[in-house]
Image 1 (cartoon, rainbow, N blue to C red):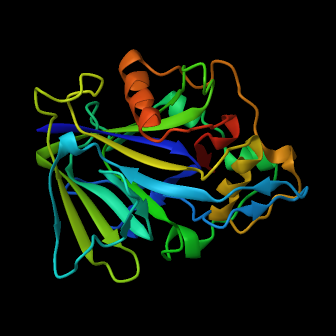
Image 2: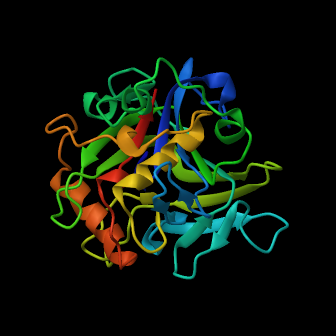
Length: 289
């Protein structure tokens, strides 16, 4: 049994209560719904409703090499759904569908435990103040997202960054225990070709700043800078267009709990690998609805 941590930063939208029949793969246990994390394709940036410039965003997968046993790709010179981002362990996400194979249900017996802190993450519906927001099936189901990450079992939690450089930014932390070896599955959305990443605990001589169990980082942050208006990119998972920047949520003190020491250590390690990094509260994760 291995415990895997997946940490989300930036424009990552978490769609709750999707029917399990929509999942990329079916878990070995019984569940009717799941959560899908989505990094929208913001590679071209956007002109905001008040003529603000939202810079291009870069969706990245980062797995520190200490955690990787091997990456298996069949009949292709490069991983499916990924493009090298230059640094070791860094990959640009290009229409990739991810999940952890052999995940186990949450320890309390529920298939997937959604903590109160996760439920308190910025809500797209509450921020938009409209009766309902319809999901865009082209993004949520049809492969137009840069990345989707399906969560069937384990615990999904949210926390705020306690680093003074990134105060109050909301991240999502997905923790999974696996039956047997930890395996990250990556499918290319357009043809379902598969890349398999075998994970392991970090060896004893690894960087002491890294936790022992595998850390997988999903991020979607500005190529140069980030501003609060970047939050509007979250609405690309819906068919609704923001009419002005007033829909950007404000931090709600105490609603999302601060990162633990170990969580913050992991976040700080990730940030140190992608300097310069300037993210604001507008680049927090969000929930739908």
